[in-house]
Length: 290
Image: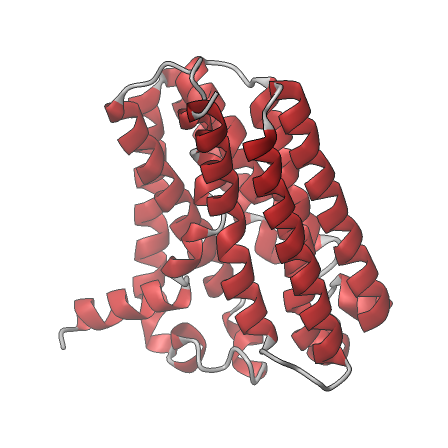
C-alpha cells in the first residue's frame, strides 16, 4: 500500500468517519420543513461543509492529543498515537479540510464564508479545554449544536427559532453521552490531571449530570414540537428518543456496577446513532401526514 493510501486510511480511521451519523440528521433537519426554500446545490454544499468541519475538528483533536492518547490504554492503538510518522500527513489533512470548509462556505454565501473562520477556531479549541476546564463535554455539545444554526444562516440568511431549539437539543444530548463515554477514562484523567466531569465528580454524580442533560435535551424536543404545533406522529418519535435515553442510562448504570450488558463504547455508538435519525424521520412524517 502506498504511503498516501496508508496515511489516508490512518487519518479516516482515527477520526471515526462513521460517527458523523450522530449529528448530521439534526444539521439537515431544516431541509424537511415545508416553509424552507432551498436548492439541491445548497444541500450538497452544506453536507460537504459538515463533513469538512468535522474532519478538521477531529483531525485537530487527534493531533493535539497524540501524546495523551499514546499513554491511555484505550486510545494507544489510534494510528497517530501508535505511529508518529503520520504527523505530517495529519497536518496536511487538517489544513486541507479547514481550507475546503472555508471555500465551500463562501460558495454558499459571503456571510457563511466570513463566519467559517471563527467557526474553525471554535471547533479547534475543543482539544485544549480538557487541560483546564471540567465542562469540556458541554463545549463539545455546543460545537455540534452550531450545525443547525449554521445551516439556517446558509439557507435563509438568518438564525431561526427552530434551529436554535435544535441546537439546544444537540448540545445537551451530546454533552450527556460524552459524559457517559468519559466514564471509561475517569481513572486515567485523574492520574494525568485531565479535566472532565467524571474526574471531578466521580461516576455516580456524573451519571446524574448526564441524565439531567438528556432530560433538558428531551424537554427541548418537546418545546420544538409545541412551537411547530406538531402532531402525534412527531411526539411518538420523541417518545422513542426518550426510550433510547432511558435505555442508555440503564446500561451505563449496569456497567459501573460491574454487570455490563454491552461496553460503554457500544452504548455510545449503537444507541446514539438512532437519535438524530428518529428526530428527522419524525419531523418529516409529521409534516407529510398532516
